Image (cartoon, rainbow, N blue to C red; front, side):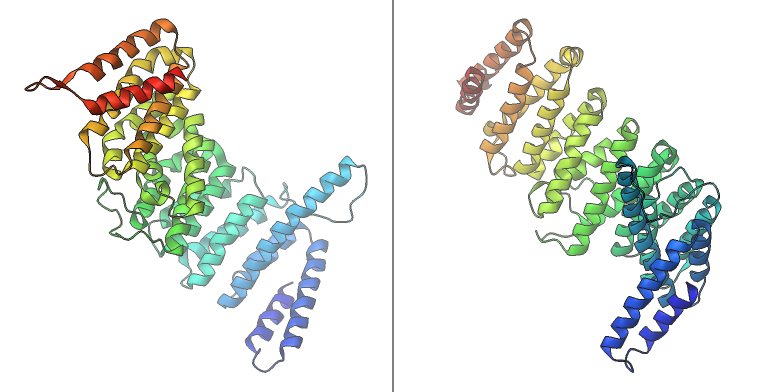
Length: 422
């Protein structure tokens, strides 16, 4: 295996002296030989061979080796799927898969530590990025409770805040894959991963509320590919964290909600992929995090959301409506008055005529939808007092000197009544 890899790299170095057809034939033949050799090798021998190749001084050899490792891991997963299907159909499968079992586990751990060493110390950025990608692939294709993964996660997280955005984006993706495998064993690393990851997100994303001092100075609406990649990595990893460690994310909910609701990259349809991923995170938060934990930071977001514009404010109330939709009878009895008063306060935005809200109808639509969602969970005895409170609010004198009622409040009130009647 070592000779084939070195031969391939040697030929690549001399490609100026060799025709393209011959290069292609050498590449195809070497790949065929590698597949055959890999099929014959025991997992421990294979992992040992890859580890040895990663000690080679040339960066090109290391990159080629890491590429082979990733390809083998992906093909290995396909082979295992074929074997499972063959067993279901009671047929024999000719393909063999490399298994990380008791005998090969020490060599697999040694390989992980070698890759980690490249991430930690390698000066060649291309090799470092290849090492990060290969570790992510190993976590996906060889999921296990191997202690090596815990050590890998700790090192990966420590590097997120340093280096360029491409490297950091890869590190965040790899951290997400490792957390997905480790589950609750990743909990000790949660504070640092959240800190470094969200700090990276704020460096490429601008929050109009100006809440975070390390926010991006960018003022234009466009996003570079690197910024999109970084934010997608952050959102994907947050999604994994909420899925695997949802009961422990309450200290970070304020910053997570800030990102997925207030930041224009996630709220104003600048990029379709970011829109979808941010919506997935918002939906997952409402489904996974208990009402008592998510409600306070979501309600506290109101003043910042009004500064950030109608898109952010509408999203905050859409999310609130989803939270209300998950509430059981006990939660409704506990929180319905607080939620209704919050909505009633927001219904006064038309009268306040804020410069930041360009489309007040869109905002009112989301607020009224939240009220309707809550109303459908109330009994007549609990609904009557809150409705009478709304009527009192609509008819109250907002200008004590002229004793005039507000026309804006009347408009909003009848919009609400129409929806309630429907």
